[in-house]
Length: 244
Ligand SMILES: [Zn+2]
Image (cartoon, protein in one colour):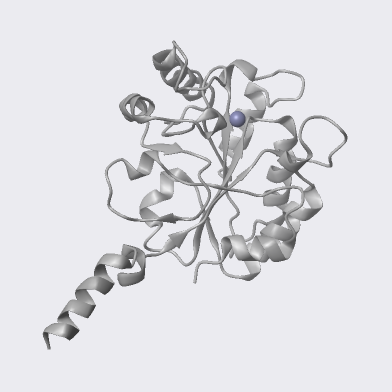
């Protein structure tokens, strides 16, 4: 009898909590450019509009619910929740928006979050303030912060301004609360998290893997994300978003 009890106690200790109490997995994907690669920058940071559309059709046909961070509370209520995020505010993210518009029906509402570097707004290959306002008003895209100048937040001397000013600028443009930030380069530390908490409800890293609720302190400021790359096949994609 004691042997059996001991066995279960050991099992509880060695298994990660998720194995003992199965928790819902929530994939959070990160994209950068939605365009054909034509030699600028890193190829793996691109996804062609064709591949992107196939990925969205896959999510639609497999019953996923695409959410933005304003809808975080719905994670436990909807079927197969997933978050799509896009960093750096490239103009070519309008290609993702177009795919969303094309696939939007009564039954399927594709949504995503664009993380914007506010000092880069309206640069040649970046979204303009008018773009941001229009896509935000569409209800399909949530605009959120990716800092003011895209520094490594763990070493910048302007941490407070990077967090606060990007939020203020974006709120002025879209007229909605800015509640999430993706840390440039995915870099963060305790100080970054503590300061982020003053202005935001969510902080996104680039630590790979789905989000699994653990009830640990600050878990909304340590949200993991998985890269979707140029070389990601539809088969790879299916594995990345798999939640059971
Ligand atoms: Zn970035």
